[in-house]
Image 1 (cartoon, rainbow, N blue to C red):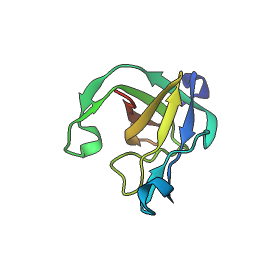
Image 2: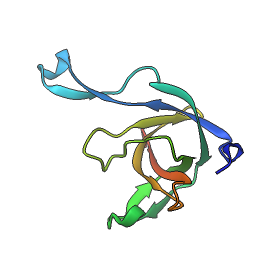
Image 3: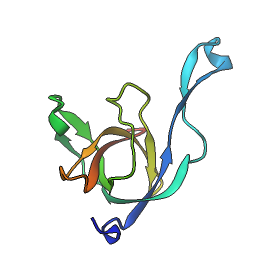
Image 4: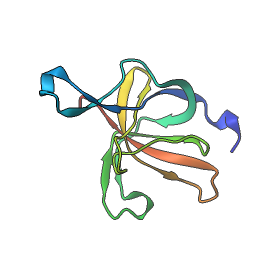
Length: 117
């Protein structure tokens, strides 16, 4: 897919697992205060909906979606690790799902859930 298609950008926040003083030494997910990577290309759609993506068999509710180049990686909430967070236009979203949208490794589609809603 032509790079001109991805007219928007996002910042990626990749969480880590850390130990907090306020948790009594238990592990917790730590979202970095600054972006892991900034200015990544995407095409953003702030349109909510419901979808059962990629044959997961579970209907997901999402607040927005985006398309990203096939070479980028987003870890979704349904993965075994911690989900990635993305910031677009001042709003923070957790990645609910991400999969090859065209079936030809052309681009990926991601469903996003806005934080604080």
